[in-house]
Image (tube, rainbow, N blue to C red; front, side, top):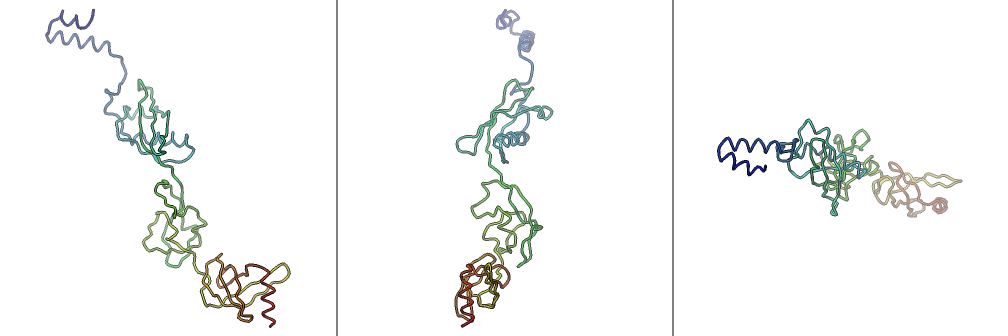
Length: 257
């Protein structure tokens, strides 16, 4: 007998309505549904699980932001949940995925954004003016690529030995090329030690720097005895090494004249 027929048989009374509700409950499948668990978890509760699934699929660290919506799971059933079908969209920023759990009768769709994360060196303390940055001054921090610019320093070799140029730096903030600089080892016009050497001969003589320079920088120096201008590489404080050994003959020739 159909439910609608039973209603007419019982009449429009409170007893009939109660009987209809009882039969309706008997025909309703057991188990939670999306409507019955409307007061579930928030998106942020599920974010770590989605982030781990994205990391495994993309083989790199990512930062996940889920679209705000209620997830039909309780805190007790969260541990049994899993993420499947993680699919980045064509824009490379948005994604869709499915939440699966034994307590759900069907998978639950979710969506959001993801950004790759890179670990970069940052300052753990601010060095004093003129103080060279050492390994003890640095620590590592994960930053999303969207927050990094082309001028961000991502390698320790680009930071170690440098001095802080900007006075508005913050501990833990990404460093840019304009924030630091290598200390000057040679100043223009000062006396320097010029080293000239090849496989057979090594010679040190005094000269004058025609340019300032940091370590590894190519500058011009003057041999005051020969009045010749030579090109060399700054190797240490007030010390320049001639760039090409062939300059050795010219230097020696100038010293003899």
